[in-house]
Amino acid sequence: MSGIAVPERDGIPRLPLSARVRHYLPFATGGLQSLLQYRSTFVTTGVTAAAGAAVTVFLWRAVYAGSPPGGGPGGFTSEGITTYLLMAQVLQVLHANRVDDEVAAEVYRGDVAVMLVRPVSYPVVRFFACLPVVAANAVLVGVPVLALFALIVPLTAPRPVDVVLFLVSTALSVLLAFLVNLLTGMTGFVTTNTWGVRMVKQSVVAFFAGQLVPLALMPGPLAAVASALPFRGMVDGPLTLLLGRYDGVSGAADVLARQIGWAAGLTLLGALLWRASLSRLEVLGG
Image (cartoon, one colour):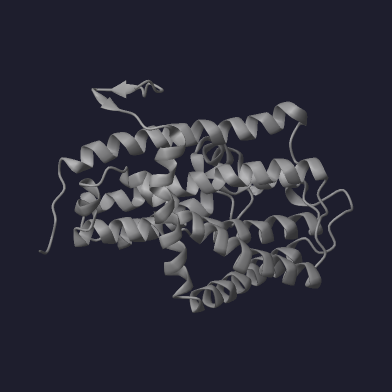
């Protein structure tokens, strides 16, 4: 019988990309079903996000009150700093994919060992499982919070091209957040209690990503350090594009290139650490 030859690797036939993707779709639908069982979580997340946005937005609006038309510190106008801080809060909601919590818990319980006997990649499984979380947070939390504040405070209206750049950059920022959280969760292979690691990660990311203070307002040396880290691509980078605070095509390309470069680097680092972690896997319990 004639047919299409399937490429082999190490003597094992390789499935087409579409077939391999279908192997992971049940994990995405399973994650969605799990979310629907805890719908009250979205209410809590929404209230928390709105409260956090209110504190930062009105605090910084007071700082920029009476600033000159050309902009105050960092070149921000009152509307510009409001838009930046509000969208930073929305991005933080998108980044709350719970991957670090779930990976650490599965390592601690030993559930991760079950995944090792399946013909799937555990990191890829976690990525597909977090997609419904990101989508649900965007629709059920991010959009309502943005709409609420748009009715309360004046915001900067971005250009259409900046909106497109922002959406592309946001997708990359979600990928960066997943990789950072995955690496954080993998510390469970070293320590059985990752609470402290996760708290430190959350604080470091919030500061160096520009979520609390825009990088443009940081002192020169500190801003240089923050710009060199991958966290900038999670908040400050996308918002730089949204607000048009970049120098032409080259400036926008630089922001996206940095995000892509860090995504590739963290993916490689995660693959190496995953292989190294398997050698020291210790399952607690039965």
